[in-house]
Length: 157
Image (cartoon, rainbow, N blue to C red; front, side, top):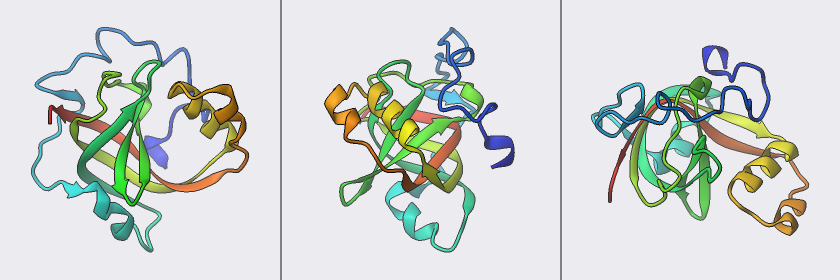
């Protein structure tokens, strides 16, 4: 993924994942690079738009299901049909509020297909506050649509 890859390939980088005044501050609802609403594709259309593509740079809009409950270092978006997509943030440059669930979002960045390892899936489940029993049930990697955002605009519903 070139410039959009996380720096060390780890699921999380504790040194870069420290919330601070710079990476948690919103400017007019924007986190990271300023994102406008114009030209955004409904996130529920993204799987169709990605058919035959490895990755695309795109602006999306949709509803946040939940955000990481540890630091706000990722969020999930509703793809419809009981499916979701994880949105991570480029180079840990910003985080979103942990109470972002239910808000409308606009994000621009790189959508791609990814093989998410068991360790990553378990880590995300832990971040989401899942029980040890639920985490232990995660035993298979998952091919899924993911999004690496360079900026997110959040608004209240």
